[in-house]
Length: 369
Image (cartoon, rainbow, N blue to C red; front, top):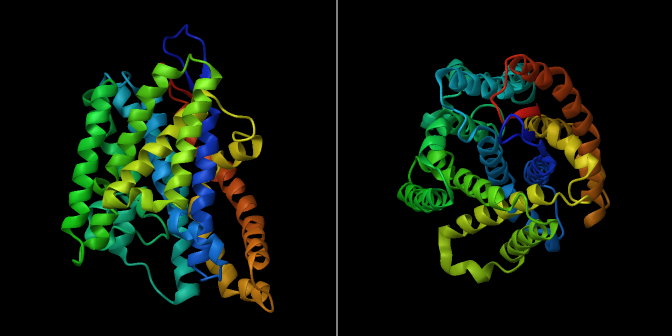
């Protein structure tokens, strides 16, 4: 999400390349998790923190999304035309590639597993309403459950822009969202609706709320020194390190530890937005950040195909430890990255260009949403 912001039509333009880098890291973290989980690759014990914690790449996507949207649209959804513009841009950012992947999955599911995509699931996914249907909440496209959450958030975002104004209200909204999320998921634990509860927007609203909190903090800090941004970034990263390697520090929080993750991720997003460290926000991260949606949707396909062809088994034959895992990761990325960059250029960008032909709201000049 590469966003250029103008507070007023004559104001100085501000770029936020850090958001692109964070999208890259979010996508790669999910790739790592699924690379381990789908083919069940053996992993050295000292790397067990990866499958246990890198799934927080999805909440990172949510934090970045809410942060970026609030930067672009806060106080700028005041008319029917602006609302129409917002929904059109959001739809065209997601739909072209997602619809292409949906069509791809029809022969893919048949060839891989001999299954047929139910027409009801195809329709609910195509209408982006599957987050509200318990039997369809995960989607038939692998990992698409998070897109159902994202699209549901888009639907209510304009309401949040009007209701959540200022840091105090943002913090209150975050606290309420955390409370509701914890009680929502606990209420369905052990029931047939557990998956639905865990995959619903209600369960993840606090991550979006953390992104909105981050926006108001960024707005206060954006004109401060790079050192301030570095301090916020460091605080967020240190908190994440503690969450990963010293989880006992947060044991008393129970389900509430996810709220700590959300705020830590938000701090990192604020930090890189105030001060985009060159090593952290590098050209490769920005390039892959642009294609992060393609990385996310294509990676289960590539991993499944390579696993079915026995590529990972061949790599692990007669080897163990870190090396075969690194080789497996390298082979996966060698196929995935070119495919993702290609689909971004040929499918995602044309869709965004359709939206960009319409005038953007003052304050949001986006090269890539």
